[in-house]
Each structure stands twice: as structure tokens, then as C-alpha cells.
Image 1 (tube, rainbow, N blue to C red):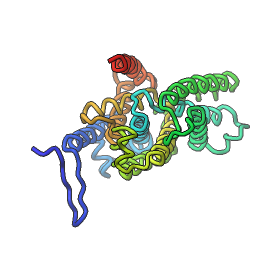
Image 2 (image 1 turned 45 degrees about the vertical axis):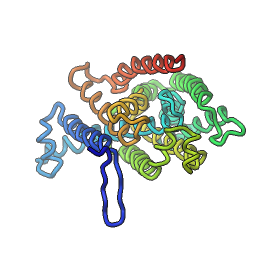
Image 3 (image 1 turned 180 degrees about the vertical axis):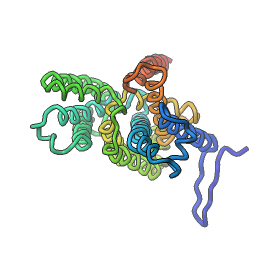
Image 4 (image 1 turned 90 degrees about the vertical axis):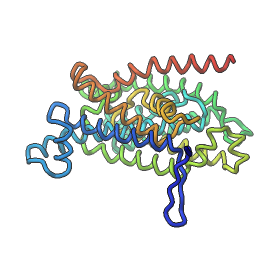
Length: 347
């Protein structure tokens, strides 16, 4: 049986890996099911939720679903997708599973911008709003990280190893700055910022949905437009260059998109830990591709965050942020990846 799936419309045609297409379809189904379950928790059944969403609900049902449950589930879906996709993009261009927005300082920079907006009403960023402030923080951190890891004479302009090491150091520095801001803030503002820093969708409203939606749209559009270049970059810089890929432009553009997507996702629900690390690696193992596939990583991220939110409202103590659940899973997985990378380096 052919491993490629061909779709033709007129003179245009697209070729897909059959396993990848089937895995993405299964992940999409899992996202829809988890989304309906998330909306229904503590209220009704997933089937009734589908009926209400299709316009068959009563006035009370519509108020509960559309004003309370739906924004929370939608933000969990979109933020998980954005963080997973951003992690997939950074892992592709660096060819390193540890190169994620969490460990490169991107989400930490976005957090500084958002916390500064929440806790310091008189700051210059306060007038921009959390999404814009988080975007500014993420872009600033990424620019600093790139400048410090710059390597003269390199076509891609950076050393991957230096990028990761500097990113980790930058992350700790920015987290220290966030801690300082919290220590100087008013009690109410500090409590609000602390809930946000852990990563939570509990207080999600329709106001944060546009930022998360923009992140997903941007990430998906770029991934589709640059699909060939991204697949080729996964084979190595030299191979990509020999196949006609403009390596420097492709890597720079992908990095900018990853920063924007991660920053906007963080702005909507906080820096939910390890989604950018877990989702691409799990998706890669499901699809059996040599490098992460951004859209599959995004779908896996959506499933992870939705399931984590469902767990916090059912089996786990009430009020627990989703970031605690993802960190509990992601921590051991990070140790596994580090051990695996060390073994590969010694063979």
C-alpha cells in the first residue's frame, strides 16, 4: 500500500503521508471529544453540549455554556495548540528536542511583560494590555537571546548549542525579574499575577480568545506555506541548502513566527509549562516522522491542555491550575529527553 495520499483539484494536487494524515485526523477527533467533555464537566453531557452549540439549547443552558464553560474550553484548546505548534517550530529549526519556548526564554519574556502590566499600573507597558505587553516581552527576550548567540560568518547567524544554553540562562534571569515584580506589587495584583504565572484557564473570558485565535491562525498559515522548507530543514542545514532552501531567511522567519505564537498564547492563559516540549515529541512519535510536524504538535498540545483542565475539575483538588498538571507530566519527560540526548552524544 502506498504511504502517500494524493489529493487533486483540477490542475492542483497535494501529497500527504498517509500515516501523518490519519494521525492528524485521529488527533482532531480527540480534540473535538475533549473539547465537548470540557464544556460539559459539572453541567451536562457532551451530547447535550453539541446540541446547545448547534442552537438547540434553552436560555439558561445558553447562558451557562456560552458565557462560562465555552470560553474556558476554547482558550484551553487554542492555547494548547499555539504552544504545541510553537514548540514544534523551534525544535525543527534547531533540530533539538530541548529547544522550546519554555527553555529559550520566550515564554519567560512574555511573562515579564504580562506581569508588569498586571502589577505595575504606572508602567509604560500598562497601557498596551496583556496580549501586547506579552508580545513585546517575548520579542525582546528572543532578540536578546539571538544577539547573545550570534555567530559571525554563519549563514543561519547563530549556534544552536549557544542558543539553548543562553536561552536557559535568560529564562532564569527573567523568572527572577518576575519574582521581583511580584514582591513589589500590591497584594491583590500579586495574587492575580501569581495565578496567571502558573498557567491557568480557570478565569478565561471571551476577551482573551482573539489573542489565542490569532496565534493559531498565524502558526497554521506559516506552517502550511513553509511546509516544504520545514521538512527539509529537519534533514540538516547543509541538506536544506543543497535542495535550494534559503536557510537563513527560513530559520529567521520561523523563529519570529514561533515567538509571536508563543507570546500570544502565553498572554491568553499564562506560561502553561512543558506543553511546547511535550506536544511536538509525542506527535513525532505518533506520526513516526523524523522531525515534529507543527500542526500535529498543535493538535497534541490542545489534547494535553484540555485533558489537564478536565482532570483539575474532576479527579484533582478543585482550583488546581492546568500548569501544575502539565509540569508534573513534563518534568519527568524532560529528564527522559536529556538522558536520551546524552546517550546519543556518547555513541
